[in-house]
Image (cartoon, rainbow, N blue to C red; front, top):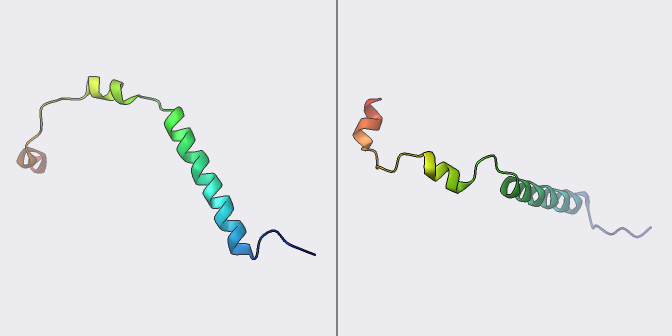
Length: 55
């Protein structure tokens, strides 16, 4: 019997790479909020790190 993959680790790497690629595609194409929407609702004034630390 001739196998396509040399060992089990090779199969695991291939399947993992395919799953990561699908996850990246899903994360980009199915955003709940676009970057433009987030920018529109965000406060544009930079915050002072001392104020953040005081919270």
